[in-house]
Length: 519
Image 1 (tube, helix red, strand yellow):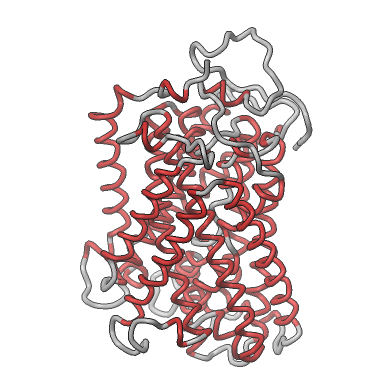
Image 2 (cartoon, rainbow, N blue to C red):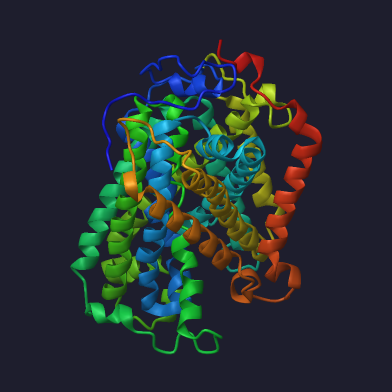
């Protein structure tokens, strides 16, 4: 692999440039290759792009939100799903690094799938990713309810938390406050978002490292604890393997979103060089920090068999191991992590919507793609995505089971959107038509095996995520077949319904809007 300064060649769009023209080293060359003119302000440095990727993954948010789920199904052995998911996602990230070096444009997944597989596949990939991002924003906002009321009862605004709908209604209220905040920050420009995001990431990283040290100082058992299977898997058709595959969803739900570092390519300085590094650093740092937190939590918790471990998760571990004072400080840091995670998810969704609208791929595209001359950012998609996320919260206020189904499906759609990039990229490699950017990140002779593994991993994990497990998609009564098969039904509706709209309504009208077209 290589990563250094040099030219950044890209496939010229029809009519944009002749094949024999010398290509400039300017950051905006990639935009001209797509037929776009530069509009967004380039203000983000290397740490800003890294922070965007790692805040989307958000180790403290994901581990504190989902630790209980993994332990509930597979016990301490669930920890091994963390390195398994990391290795699979690393294959995907390495493919993305080559693409980020060659095509550092906004809405990375949309533009990459369009460039590699054509406009139809590109639209479908962008549609799946944009829809999933809006649902993901609502899901991240719900994490406030898991943490804030444990810090203080003041944050349980609706009821006292004991009523049947108190928690759900309060989650919507807290989540709405967070989404309003992320909407305002993202609407006021990428520089403000990046500054808040970077500060939040610094707090999250410092807190995570301190937490690792504190948990390590309270270890009460040896590493043999994480290879115990006990009675987990009893009743499963595949035994413990079946329980482990279910528990692995907790890790799969966390380790994605690293492509956000490249989705800000049009607002970054030297993105062809910095974006691939940011992607890898975000994923590797998340793996190391998250893996150590999970490991030491399992080795330090006072009672590994406590029912609270599979109910309250890491919050229980922190409070019972470190005490209420230190525990509350850590939980406040988790609140910061949730906030910057929501900021990053919202920012990524804005860039996706902007990129699709710039190609006239969405209703009211000219409005959605309009860049505010005052703030230098697309304001309309920021507001629209915020409204949709709040609506998703409100309509599911008393239907937590349906919301958990939709949230799970959003993650599946993101994995499928990733497949819509890695699969056509593999086809290009097999046909000898893929050429990395010269002088920038390249997998060299490892490109083909890495790409094959990325596709196999993406397909296998998508199937694992979508498998109609009643304990995931219909955990409590009343039991409905459409909930258990919700993944296949909902993904099918979103994909087929969206593509039908594209094929019959938008397909003949797509193309770079005049206001955004490169001279």
